[in-house]
Image 1: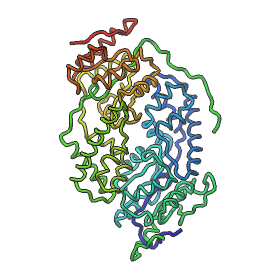
Image 2: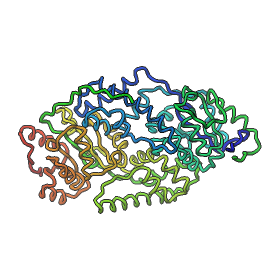
Image 3: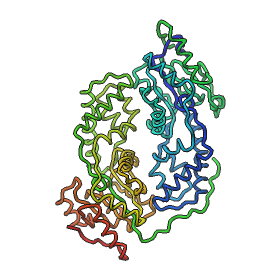
Length: 547
C-alpha cells in the first residue's frame, strides 16, 4: 500500500461529520422527547398508543439499529436504509398497521427531529481554524458521512455558520450507500475534481472510516479520536496513518506541510408486546385532500429555470467547478423535458412511479454536464430538489381553503394531504408558511412513497395510516384521473372535485356525469356544507354538484 506524503498539502480534505466536525452527546431526556413527538404525530391522525409502548419500540429499534450498523460495517459495499425502512422495520416495528403507517408516512421529518432530539451537537476544537486554513490555501473540503438525516446535518452546519466551507456533502441517506462502501469517498472526490489518492480523509471509527478510506484508495487516512475509536465492534486490520485527540492535530499537520515545495505523488432482543389502544372509529369521515389545485394554486414564476440555474452555479462553484450559466440553463431544460418524457412513457404502460431526486438531477439534468458535476448533482439531489420545488411554482393559498381546514379541525376530522410532488419536504414547508400545518394531520407524498396518483398504492397508504375504510373516506382534488378516478379505484365513497385548477370545466363536468366524481364545487369552503349534510345521514350518498 502506498501512502501520500504528509509533507505536502492535500488536493482536498474530506471529513466525517460526527466525531470530526461535530461531537455528539446524548440528551438525558432525548428518547422521551422522541416518544412525545411520535405520540403527537399519531394523535393528529386519531391514534392513541400507550406512550410506554412507543418508548419500548424506540428503545428496541435504536438498539437493533445499532446492531445493524455494526453488521453493515463488516460488509464490503453496504447499502443505507431508507427513511421509511428505519421507521417501518425498526422504530415502529411492533405497532399495528395503522399507527405504523402513520409514522412511516412522516419518516423523513421524524428522523430529522430525532437527530437533534436525542443528541446535542457541539463543534469540535480546531474545526473552525482548520476550515479557515483550507479556505485560505484553496484546499477544497467535503463531508463524507453516514447519516439517518443528511437534512438535519446540513441544518446544523448552517446554524453553526459552517456550511459555506464545504464544496460537497455526501450523506448516506441521500446517496443510498453507507461507509465503509468506498464509493462514497470516490463520489466526493469526483465531485471536487480531485484524485482521491492525493486527498486526506479524516474519520473517527476504524470499522467504517478507516476501512472505507483504505478500500477507496485515499492518499492519507487520519483519525480524530472519540469514544468509538478504540472500541470497534469487531477486529479491524486496516490502520490509519495518524491518530489525533482532536481536529487540532489535523490543522497542525497541514501547517507542517504548508512549507513543502510540491505535492508528493500517491503511492436482537425479543420485542415486547403490550396492549395498544387504537381509536374507535365513529361516523366522522376522514378527509384526504390534494395540495396543488385545492389548498394552493400554482402560478409559474417568471424565471424558474433562471433561478434554478443560479442555484446550480452556486453549488458547482463551491465544489470548484467553473460552469457556464448557459450550460446550466440548457441542462435544466433538458432535465425537465426528459422527466416529462419518462412520465409519459411510464403512464402509457400503466405505471405511475415518481421520479427520484438522484435520477432527476443525476441522470436527467446531469447528463448534459461534465461527469464530475453530474456526480455532484446526484450527491446533492435531495437538497437540490427541495430548493427546485420552491423555485418552480409560486403557490398562493386558494380562497376558501383555510376556512375548510379550520372547519375540519374544529369538527375533529382527520385530514391527510395526498399529493403528487417532486418534494414532500417542500410541500410541508409551504403549508407551514401558510400557517396550515396545525390543521394537517399527516401527509402522503409521491416522492417519498415512489408512487404517483392515480396508483392505488398512494391512496391505500393514506387509508392505512388513518385506519379508515374507503366507505368512510372523502377525497378532495381537482383532477378527474389522478384524484377522482384514483380514489374511486380503491373504493373511496365521496370524491369531490374543485373547479379552478388545471382542468377545464367541461372535463370536470364530464367526470361528474359519468360517476368518476361524486361532487363538483367552485371553492374548497363549499365542501363544508357537503360534509355537514353527510354527517346527518346514515349513508354517504352523492349530494350532486353545486353550480
